[in-house]
Image 1 (spheres, rainbow, N blue to C red):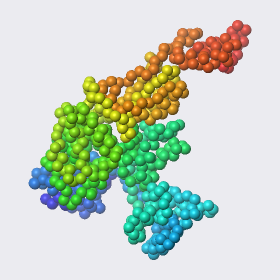
Image 2: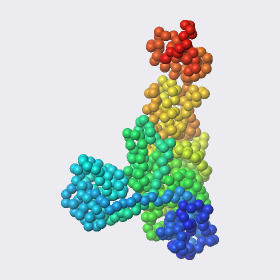
Image 3: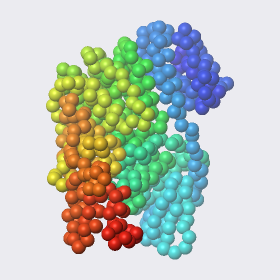
Image 4: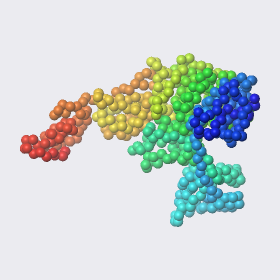
Amino acid sequence: MDCNDLLFVSVKSPFASLQNTTILAPEELEMRSYDDEPFIVSNVPTEHAYLVASEINWLLASRENPAQCAKEVELLYQSRMLQAENLQAEKTCHVANSLFVLGSGKSAEDFCLLANQNGFEAVLLAPSDVVSIGGHLGAFSAHFGNGEPRVYAQGVLFVDIPALQLYRGIESAGDFDDAHALLSALHARVGEYVYHEILHFDSTYCQYENRREKCCAACADACPTFGIYADDSSKQLHFSAIDCTKCGACVALCPTGAITFKESPTELFLRRVRLFADYQILLIDAPTLANLPPQPPALPPSVLPLVVPELNAFNPLLLLSCVQENGANVALYKPNASPTLQSAIRITNAIVARGYHDSMGILLMQNLADWEQLDSITTIPDAKYFYTPRANEHVRKSFAERLRFVVKDRDLGVLPFEPTLRYGQVKLKDGCTLCLSCVGACNVGALIANEQHFTLSFNPSLCTTCGYCVSSCPENVMHIEESGIALNAQWFVPHVLAKDSPFCCVECGKPFATTRSVQKVRDMLAANFASDSRKLRSLECCPDCKVKVMLNATTGESHVERI
């Protein structure tokens, strides 16, 4: 059996029902020709494959007898088949050979001439003539002081304008070793440029969109391109799939999980992790897998690679989920681990260490010299926990449930506040009237109103410290302390911040408001209504009785005065 020619899963269309898929059982693995039909998953690169699972070759090369690891091979392609459920259709953008060169001087002039000699329709633009440039790959509009805007497919900068370098399709000449390398990069996009919709956005839990105050925008701040742009004037996020580099920074930093990878939602990731129940997991992402040396270090027995789109998109929820679902340490190989990923690993390891006798949760490997750490993967007694989030459950809720399992009824101390995972306590000064504006402002359910008992409660395990409740409080009695994660049972239980007694209508006796709110209104209007006893009394009436009180019964008038 030659692992370089083995194909495991085939189907006539990559988007057909999986019921039409041919999946080979372990004993049926065989050489397959891939000249006739497309494949969903292949272990070798071919134009007929939609997912290339090169980790299968890695596994086969790591085993002394590849023919005896059919079960492991089957598991790896089943994992990729689950990934294929969210396979995104290709999108295309036509990129013509038009090109603007923004700059002045001999270097810009020479490159413009060279580009025209190499198949481009290049135009040299003087920076002083250009008012603005915007758009996207294939359709950049250059605006001038007078006249109609001109459209170009791509651009080259011989001036330092960092904002324009965020666009895919606009290159800085200084980033290339020579003009021919730059031309090669430009030529690669000419024609039908293929891209995918990378991100899924759920505005329900977004803490930026449509708010009066800017409370977040961590995704846009972290984006290295114009993949996400935050318009502070309208409080709207704008997404550009063409410009998205799939770096994962926005996914990792979103405090509520409003942004996820379309091809790897949390529910799908958990299903893939559960396939590895009898094995130890090595997390590795597709870019890192592609850059492994031709002969990577062997995988130890019982260790299997779980390939994900981008590890820098991982947050503590995904990491802790992996540890709990597998009940063991999890190895993670990422040479260029971002500071956010390193922070997530640090938080996860602190939780696991406190909950399970100083056990290590995530074993981070950043170079091949760390490979020996794979031999130290062990099970963690009592750590195994299966939890499936409810539909549309936000990240904080899911993370709280997993933390609750670790803590149980113990007090494991406090994890300090981390900018990448913000937790805190809402505090109130005297003066809350239970208007509940803060409850309406909180979209993660951290602030809870009980209208029957006239209470305002707070659940710190759900709070993101966005501060929107503070800016929404008309009494200005609310503030937030950035206190971190308290690993004790009470931290998960809502506690009462404010309580008041019901105020009963002076006419019918029905409760209709809180005592403090009525008292506040009386204090505000008493001076204005001092000469009219009916108006004063109406301030203590429910809406139904207010009308009756305002009727001038003593004089027989049947009109209603407006207050």
